[in-house]
Amino acid sequence: MKAWLKAVSGFTLALLSVALAHTAVSEKEEAYGAEARLFALDNQTGQSHVVALDLPGGRVVARLSVPPRGISLVATPSGRYLLVSRGRDTDRQWLTVVWTGKEEGRWSRPVVAKSLLLGRGWNIGHGAEAYTLGGRLLAFAERDAVAFRFSEEALAPEGAFQAELLRLPNPDHYHVVEAPEGAYLTLLARGQVVLFDRDLKEEKARFACPVEHGEAFHEETGRSVFACARDVLVLEGGKERARLPYPVSERIGAFLKGKGVFFGYSDRVTHLQRLDPVALRLTPIPLGGVFLRGKSDGERLYVLLSDGRLQVREAREGGLLKEVRVSRPFPEMDEDTGGAILPDLAPWPERGLVYASLPHMGLVAEVDVERGRVVRYLRVGGSPTRLVLVRP
Image (cartoon, rainbow, N blue to C red; front, side, top):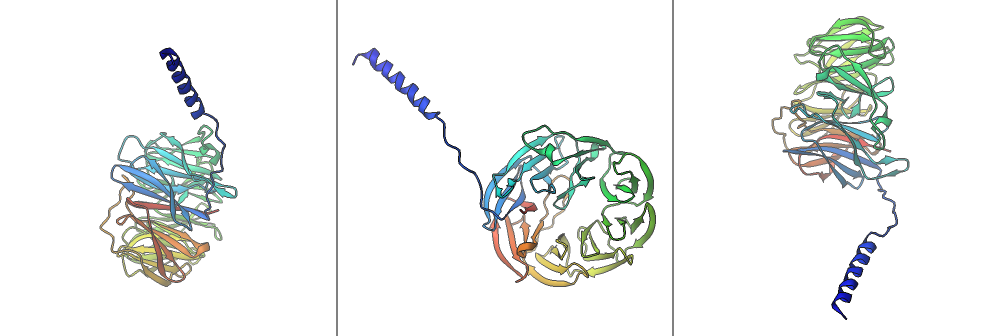
């Protein structure tokens, strides 16, 4: 064969191979056989990931890169999206939206749906739940004194992020409580609780509450409670109902919801404080250790102590039901707003399980609540901190 004919033949074959390499392929369903999906925020040095584990198998199905030093991981009410806020120690405080893969009758691959750079000092939820106001999601950009209110549809990957901008009184640390008389906005630095209308636009009243941190609403009485530096402020119908002094030399920084009552706690306390919103009484409950993390499923309280014990308590009186050692003692940890380092808990009450992240070991412990023992350890790697369990 002549040289020029060989060259043409070779060129033709090369073109044909390229064409064949780009032929159409058939689509296949990318579905996962999970009952629930556990998400863990893994904060390693210089990098962070949101790790997704399908349950009950426990297999890691995704490891999504997010900006380093994540501080909060919360789920929207539907469970279709997670919001991940970054710590406040840089000038690029991204808000990352993760689509969890939860769909009607199936689970798909989780992906990062959006990355938003809208403000500084994000405060997006309490525990594992995103804030809402009037049925819509609410995210505070505290350093910019604004809040964004938006629907879940605004988080969809196929659309633009559209939100209502709410101006706040001043840069501060904010929380909101919805009540029949309006919406209470708390200001930690200014030491005030402010009653607004339901859209946070018209101010109606102000109440002193130095270093306010921790709030709850009791539907049966219509009473709102706020943890101040020295006491708990109780408001009803837009008026002060009571101030309850702390019965021990520890203050409340947040509340767990129990059965008709609330349980106050804070970092490194040695008591829970049971708040009866009807009798207006605070009762201390000794823990026998140092509080590290707590969660509630409405029927039980789960309290992780610094020495590695997990306590299971009933959610009306706070009595101890079981105690399980899930870890060796935790190292001394002082978490600031630069990023999450503390362990977390995620109950799965339908299965009688609770998950505990162990950042110093790179593990998540799966605890059988009924039998009072660790079933297994899930290897996440890195330093898993915040947990969110998404159920069907």
